[in-house]
Length: 583
Image (cartoon, rainbow, N blue to C red):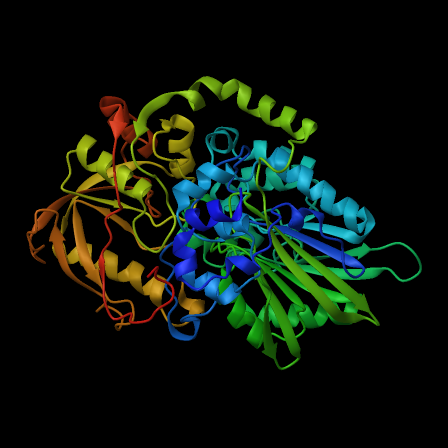
């Protein structure tokens, strides 16, 4: 693709001030760059069980509030390009932003896929020296696809092992039953670490399996890896930080014996103890906190050199330095869906970090040949389910995606299916970040529907709710998403709605962010009036209805073709000059 084609393709980026004359012309250059220093740390996160290449659209709405306003990761589209200036190639611009997504996706093709991911990771290992390289996985790996649901995550354990992951932590890994999670961890060839997951006192009394009965840690809190040949190897301590709010954001009934939390003070004590006992050259936090939490944590807990973060699916091409009382900490986040590999090259000497180079490499399937061994494993995993995965449900005339603070078009489709099949006025769908994209004119297969819905609590419900109850739900989720203190943001984006809309003021006080709730016909929703509401994925007790993927599949089979168009968005007020919104 020449410069003229690229300018035409991403004209909107040029309007935002990006200099195409200074853009790197070679889209292959990132894969050919030489190593720097004496240690290479590789990071993937939030792949959500996507074994094969997919399309994935980055958000056009990622609102930062409080100290997070107008800073990474809350820069989208042209605003992100302005921040990066000339540091991105045409392919990377497509990878990092939503700009002209459909046209760019048709040009550049699919991203991710474990066979292509393995080819890149093996190349990166060889480039720096396998003995100098460590591969870390930030979690949300063993969930997110049909095969992961049907095998209870075992397919992804096999793929993770073949990929050669050395250390990982978790989040959606804990949405299987405790015994299933422990079985998967036992089958994992690397080290599964989590300093913030403890057995409850009752569970310890009853003798549930734990890593350390004295501390109550369910899993090892950290691991030390020795990298490099010769007489001066580098000792890297990797501390695990699982998603702190797992029992709140996901059903506690699956993990009744475990407690979580950010546990800042315990982490500070753990860092100090590791530095005292292990004398590492480098201390790394492998985190599933979400980037805003990691940035705050980095400013408050000294002694951590680098945080490799996940959970919020932010593809951030730079490592952010954060000052604290002990010096500084570098904070990164490596996107989702197998779309990126974070590459941190380090110069470590005299017992400390001297210098670094960081790159976030997009994984373009057309640029990386599939690894034969991984491809064979993927085919073997998928073979028993090929008929179910390949069923064509309908065709889409418009882009389907899920990613952003509010409704995506795939969320809108799910809500339409719920209201239509379950005969409801209003539909509520969780603000999950995981899920792939489908380009206009493509088939909606059962596999693509499962990418949005394959989880261990997919049951639907229909019940009457008052307008007041609806407002309480929306206010609660808005407070979670837009709370100015990152420590009080408990995961996920805004609940998706169908059959109604509303006005949202993210900067308003708690309980005052939602107003003007109206049905799609314009009728104002009354606090004391009852409405028939359908939904799915209840975190408390199990809902009584059929799995959501069965309900939405019925809806699609009846129609054969759908055209969602632009996703219905709330009216957003009070955010003048917020760069988390595409202009």
